[in-house]
Length: 421
Ligand code: ATP
Image (cartoon, rainbow, N blue to C red; front, side, top):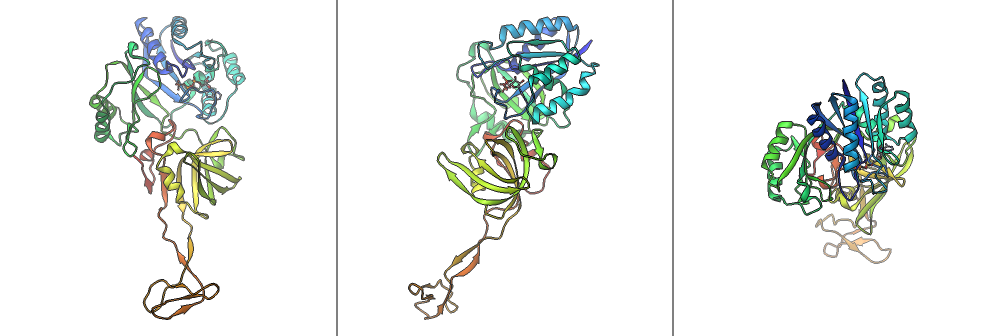
C-alpha cells in the first residue's frame, strides 16, 4: 500500500523541529522494512500565522508499506519527541492513501493554508469526509499543516539539504567555520542561494535557535547543494536529509487581480503610486504610503531588512511600484519591490549667473537674486530636475532578512533586477 504521511506542529521555540522528527520516523519505518519513496517535502505555510513557532513548516513523505504499522511507529515517535509541554505545540499527523479521493481536495486546501487562514473545522471536515487515519495530540492544530503538506502540488519547487547535530550537542553553540560557508557560496551560487549574506557578513544557513538543525543549504540543483555541503566545515553531522520544498517560490503571494480587498494575515503583490515619502521611525524602521486600487496602504521596511531600507528611502512621491509582502496591522511588510516608473522630481534653487555660471545669492528679503561679481540679477528661484539615485527594476531584502517562501531575485526571470547578496 502507498500512502502519504503528513506531520506538523511538534516543536517549540525551546527545541525540536518537525523536519527532524520526520527523519526519525522515516528511519523507523525503514527499519520496519517500509520504503520512503522520493524526497520528503518541507512545505512552508502562511508565514503570518500567529500559531507558528518559526517558519510555519510542515512535512510529508510518501511511504510504501503497512499503514497500520506506520501509524503506530509515527505515534510512538510523536509521543517521544514532540514538545508537548509547550502550550503552543499541538501536534497532528495524517495518513492519506494515494488513491483516496481526498487527494483531489487537498491541493485547494493546501493552497489556502499557504495563502490564507484555515480553520480546524475545515481540516476535520476533510478528515471525516474521507475517513483519513490521523493522530491528534492536544488541540491537534498540526492537522492543518499535516493535510496541507500532503496536498500541495509543487508546480515550482526548490531543494534544501538539512544537516542535523549530534543529540548531545542540542542547545549548545554551533561549532562551524564561517569562512567555509562563504567559500561554499562562492563556488555554488547561483545554483545555491541564501547560504550567506556577504554584505551583512552573516552565515544564513546556520540557525541560532536551539533546534537540532546544524545547517540548511538551499538551491535549485541537487549536485550544487551536495558540492556546497562538502565545502562547509562544521562540528560532526549526525543525520542529513534532502527535502523538496516550496521555499523561495513566492507561493504565498496573492496577486491583486485575484482579490477584492486587502486583509491582514495575507501576502500580496500590490501596485501603487507613492503618495507619502518614506520616513524613518525610532529603531530604524522605514515607512511610506502608496495609493492602490484598494485605497491607501502603508508599507514598511523594518530594521532587519538592512540595506533594502536605503532603496526605500530613495522613493519619491509619484513613483509607480509593485510591492510584495505580508499584511499585518494594515501594513505591508516588504519582501521586495519592483520600481516600474520613477517620477520626475524637481527642486527650487537659486538661479545661476548667465555670465560666470555660478549660483546667485539672495539680494535681500523680497529683492530677488544677484551675482555680486558680475552684477547680474534675477527675480525668482529656478526649478531644477533632480537626478534620481535609484533606477527602475526589482529590489529585494538581503538574504539575512529573507522569508522562507519569498522568491529571491536570483530565481526570478526578470530583466531589471538588483540582487542583494
Ligand atoms: P517549525 O517551522 O520550526 O517546524 P512552525 O513555525 O512550523 O515550526 P508550528 O509549530 O508548525 O510552527 O505551528 C504552526 C501551526 O499553525 C500548525 O499547527 C499548523 O497546522 C497551523 N497552520 C499553518 N498554516 C495555517 C493556516 N494557513 N491557517 C491556520 N492554521 C495554520
